[in-house]
Amino acid sequence: MEKWKKLNAEAMEYYQKGDLAMAEEKFNEALKITEKFGSEDIRFSECMDNVIWMYHTLGKVNKAEAMIRQSLAIQEKVYGADNQYISWNLSLLAQICQDQGKFEEAEGYLRRAIAIDEKSIGSESPSLATYLRQCANILRQLDRNSEAVEMETRADKIKVKQPST
Image (tube, rainbow, N blue to C red; front, side, top):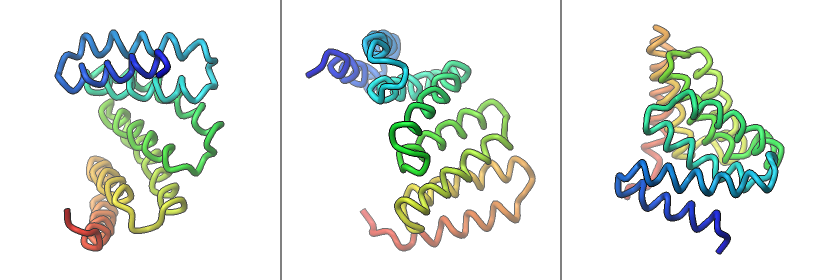
């Protein structure tokens, strides 16, 4: 196993145990290794995604926002603009923007995530329902309640069609 992957796995273990300081240390070690692959290498982006999630969890939204924008740029070059992986990161960027009170910007990212999911995996995917609910929440914060209800209704219709677990 490559050293960066091993460090990343160790960091995830620390993260799951709640030792965020050690997780951050290991994630950053892995990130330094992947930086050497080049700023447009997907391994760098994959490693960055874990650091982004951790920073978001820790409330370090400014750090998370800067990194996710960089990661998205790499992913769009590698995977293309309509890849499902992109929609997941757009959703996280929307959440980060929402945390900062940038509701209109967050809405734009979520609408793009919704469009990508509809195109790439279909109109009944569980992730689409999640993005619809997330967007409805933002619309409520923007006092656009009728639009929020439409999105929630659509998300409910998707959820009903999902097999129960």
